[in-house]
Amino acid sequence: MMKPLLILCTVVAAASNFGAAQATVHMEPENLKGPRVLEDQTRTTVIRDYLQAWQGLHAAMEQNRPDLLSADFVGTSKDKLADTIQQQAALGIHTRYTDVSHDLQIVFYSPEGLSIEMTDKVEYDVEVLDHDKVTATQRVTARYVVVMTPAEVRWRVRVFQAVPD
Amino acid sequence: MKSGLTIVLSGLALAATQLALAQGASLTVPKSIQAGSAFSIPSTGSGSATLYIIGPGQALKRDVQLGQATDFAAGTLYNAGRYLAVLSGGSAPETDAFDVVPAKSPSTVSFLAKPSRLPVGLHNGITGAAYVFDAYHNLIVTPMPVSFELSTPSGVVQRTVESNKGVAWTALDSTEHQGIDRFVAHIGDVSTTRIVGQVPGDPCGLKMSARQDGQRLDLATEPVRDCKGNAVPDGTIVTFTETFRGGLSTVDVPIKRGVAEVQMPIVNGATISVASGVVMGNQIGWGK
Image (tube, rainbow over all chains, first blue to last red; front, side):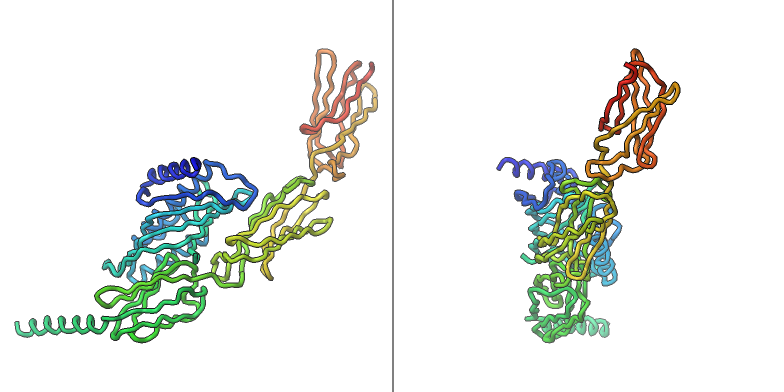
């Protein structure tokens, strides 16, 4: 009981350092499928980097700037998000994705240590703006499957995909 | 003055008409759509409006006639995720969320395999994790059987694992024979291959012999092999050490054509030992 609480506090504190303090974060006990032990430091870093990725998503989608994705996203997820930003820009739309709460669970740490998969039952607000006029605001609840891989100094999001509950 | 008033009144009338036309508008969104498939979103009401399909994966915008269905051709919406459908045109937008789910058939397997080179005879030494994607690079999260196959010079090892949340993994032993192995992850007729090199392990039973040649000793190992009988590769360093009263002489020699050879000076009462890395071989005492 103490350990998840400790992790939660650590993660929230870590997120606060990156200006992502608004969203509440809950960490489910791990349900790891795999032989590799997940060290506390790795766990904390992965969660911190994932929460920071939401800030990157927010900024990139709001400003229609795909370059803002590079710090947090890589591979397919980055390509897809960048395509969306280009579509938004072409349509005169921009969007604000503001995460409200996260319920995270790490489900897989690959044996060679090159990927971590987790699920996130996330609540977020979506604001759609068409030529700077707010068209709609909606709170969305979704379960995301996220795969993160290590880069030079941090973990980056490689798969970022909502799946039906 | 009069014409300006007319324009303003006309504009107000038009806006009121659009509002009235768009009143009572609603849309019916399917709860789930398979990635890349055609779909339709019917609406009620009358007049014109704008339909937005918004998600992190894609953004679409269509002018629609209320009361009619808006058709989206196959291949229009293909990135899996949760989307928001927003019908805008009236006083308040109509919104609804829906999911785009991955296509059912896998198209690519992203296969992380490690290591690319390892010693023979290592328990669970070869690991692989396979992520399964559809043709649109969506992670297929429904369970699927993934087959891992390690083809080695001495045979084939196969294991089938059901994917969980899009990923399946396995760990296999390296075999007893050195060589180049093919490590393949299959799902249906989709596969990805990685090459794994199995190299001999540390020398095992390292043994040398000595023969006098004038004032020198010819030292030579027997063919250097690992514990599985694989020849340790040429270039591996073997260390000969001669210890005598008040002195020590060490020579590092690479294995050539399977053996390590060196000449060392004869010192009566010397002890000569051989080692490779942390593996010790035999000792020879000379002239006692």
